[in-house]
Length: 69
Image 1: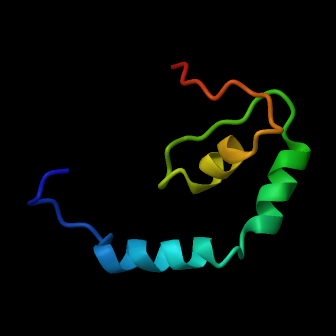
Image 2: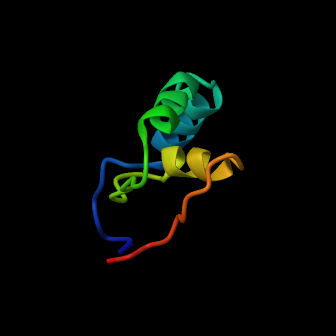
C-alpha cells in the first residue's frame, strides 16, 4: 500500500477486529457456513480472510482452497 494513501483503516482498527474474532463471537456463524456450503465458496478478498481461514483450519472439510481467476 502506498504510504501516502489516506484510509480509515489503522492499527487500532485491526487490533480491535482481532479481539472480536478471538472472542469466538463468530464461531456459530462459521459452523453455519460449514453446514450450508456444498461444493463452492467464494472469498472475494473483502477483508483479512478470517472466515476462509477458519474453514481452511477444519481438517474435516475436504475442499480445494485454490484460487482460479
